[in-house]
Image 1 (cartoon, rainbow, N blue to C red):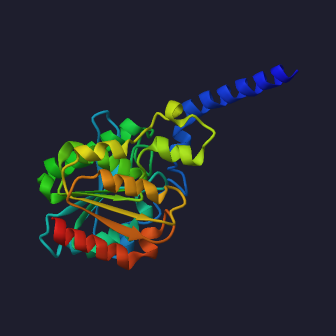
Image 2 (cartoon, rainbow, N blue to C red; image 1 turned 120 degrees about the vertical axis):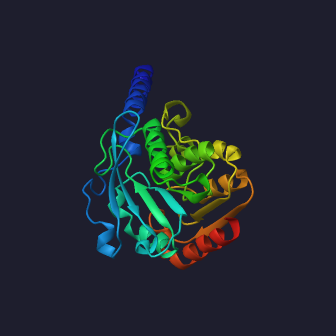
Image 3 (cartoon, rainbow, N blue to C red; image 1 turned 60 degrees about the vertical axis):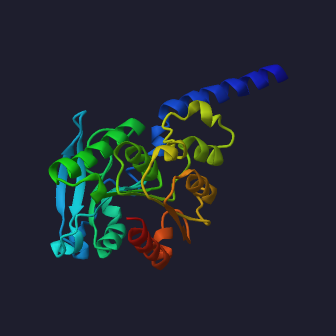
Length: 275
């Protein structure tokens, strides 16, 4: 009887792992949280913007916003290419847009495939293609040089940003609240799962940093309840010089706002000293 019971548990566990393997995108990507609807635009915070549709090499349509620095009152060519986290869409990032706009920087933000108004379904390789598409837009259509572009990734977006930075050598890479890899952060939240075997959207940020040769800024809070602070410590140790660390306060989603003054001062210092 005991053997049958243990066998039933083992079969259930294996079946659960197989189900999670094939359905893991539902756990990693949450474009519907809180909604896929575009709930606001930069115009709602007094900023001019262009609503863009970028077409990828695999024929998806990626929604993006381009916000010129200070309503085009400056001639700055320095441009932020921003990749957001795994939930919501570009309309939930107005605070971030405002912060970088106040720093005198142009700003391009995209919604990955399957997020907001973008078509398709999200995947690791899909988000990389979407990032390449945004980069090609800035370099090809906006005629920017790589040294004009600062790549920024927050949370999941840090994994996307690291992959792009490894290939294109931007002016700077900024990683906010970013994991070493999806496999390792999944192991923290699901210690009973063999994450090294079943995670297929890996986003191996840590292993890519040694191949990224541009100034790097890493920001994280010790109070982050989603991605351990230790992940950014390890990422920082692996990053090449020059590099700087911004220590935030607060939880995963709002640390940059709770510690806004430290965050903005850290960004301004990095822009002044590393560019």
